[in-house]
Image (cartoon, rainbow, N blue to C red; front, side, top):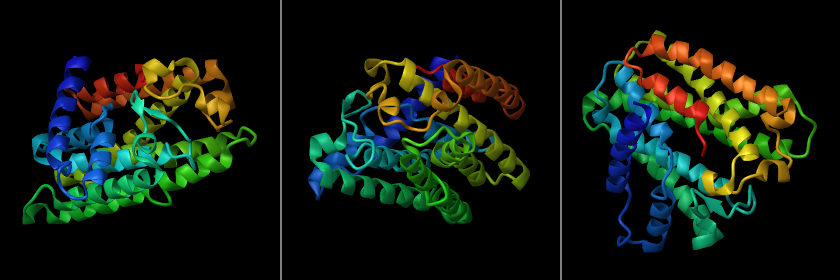
Length: 293
């Protein structure tokens, strides 16, 4: 069920991404080539899947919000393009391919990331189309701007850079992971529900669940950097240790980090079953807990 569900979700998102991205032949061609290269290189598409499924959990039809869900994937991809830059993680491999700055140059990579962020919010402000969705679109833009701004993902990236080489600090680690990863994942889930007109109680439950799912995702990411290989990950393995980043293994060690991931995903499976009797939300938790890339 897990593989089939995720494969079908990814197929729908990929098809929509192909449609909403500017074609390569349109001016400025090189910028559009870089944007499409970054987005269409593959990926888990977890954020748009969460967006679609948040809408479904609140009683909506997920097909109505697929173009809007593409907006969060563009925003996510912008963050990856900038994260890979020489001034940041200086990585040369992403999703098994040379990173955008390696292929197109550093300046164009920065501009491609800028364009993806902007285009992502354009999609969120535009879809679903129609006056009845207008209030929901505005609230979604606000939610996601908060999640990826200075007190969210960007702030978390700053904390990530500033924590390199510093002493292990559990409180700082928690703050970093919540800001850099968990807030955005949670906002994607809640945004879909907002467009379905979900009440505040439902949105709050989904937000709490999304934050914990985001923490589990980041713990798994920290572990994979230590235990995975470059071929599986599609990016350079071992970079966290080389750069002396603040991670779960650095703070707690491998065994305790694995246990924390198992404890967290175990609790999430129970919550997911309560939130979604179809089992699809549990499938996402299972994917996060045992992913290899």
